Length: 321
Image (tube, rainbow, N blue to C red; front, side, top):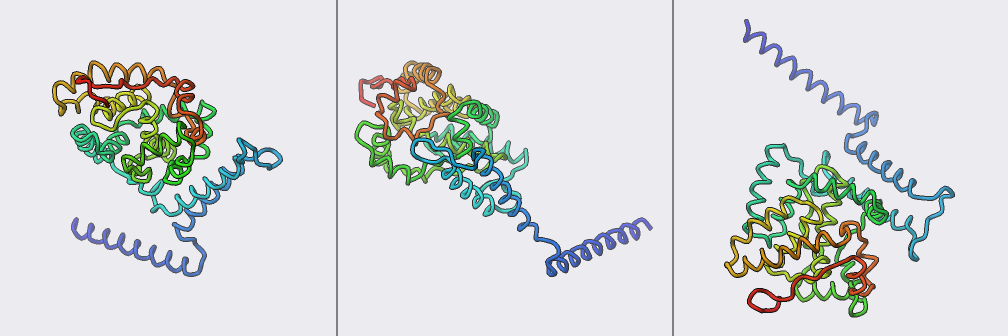
C-alpha cells in the first residue's frame, strides 16, 4: 500500500509538471507571458537607464571635466555594461561569471592557492586565489573607493585598461607615465587584454574592483620600478598586501620564496620585503587613482605626488635588477 501511494504521488507530480510546461508554452506562443530571459534583459536595460539618468545635473546638462563630458563617458560605460549584462547567461552577474557552491569555492581556493605559491608567475592561478580568498579585502577596497572622490568616480564610470589605452599611452612624450608604461609592456611583449578575467566573485561591483586591481598591476611595476623576475613579483605581492590586505598576496610572499636559492631568498626577506612594507604603507591609496588621466604626466612628478618609493636597485650579488 505504501509503494502504491508513493507511485501515485510521483505520477501526480509528473503530470502536474507536464501540464505546467504545456500551459507556459501555450501562453508564450500567444505572447501573453514574456520569456524569462527577455524579461531579465528588460530589467537590466531599465536599471542601466536609471543609473545613467542619475548622473546628470538638475537641468539634464552633462557636467564637464577636463574637456570631456562625464555624461558621455558614463553613457558609453553603461552601454557596455548593458550589453555585458544582456550577453551573460541567466543567473550570471557579468560575462564569464561562474557560480560555485561553498564547497567548490573552498576546494578551488586551496588548489589555486597551492598553484599560485608554486608558480607565482601564473596570473590565472594568482587571480583565482585572490578572488576566492580575498572577498573581505575586495569589500574593503570598494568601501575606500566609495569614500574617495576619484575612487567613487571610477566605480561609477568603470573604465578599463585595454590595448586601446596602451596605444594612447605610446603616443605620450618620453618620461611620462604613459610612455614609460608602454615601453615596459612592449619590451616584455605584454598585452593588457591577456589578463585573465574575473570569474568567481559573486558581486558585480566587487568583480570590477578585482578587475581594476588586476589591470593596474603592470602600472605598479612601472611606478615602483620593480622587475618582472620571481623576486620582483614576490616583492610586489608583498607591497600589494600592505596596500590591499589580500591574504593570497601575503601567502604567496611568505611561502613561494622556498623555490629560490638561499642567496636570493635572503635578499628577498632582508631587503625587498622591508622595502615593500615601507613603500606600501607610505604610498597613497593606489586603488583610488585614475591612471588613465595621468598618462601624459611626468613620471617623476607622479612619484613625488603619490609618495612612491622606488625598489632597491641591485640584488645581493651586486647584479642589476
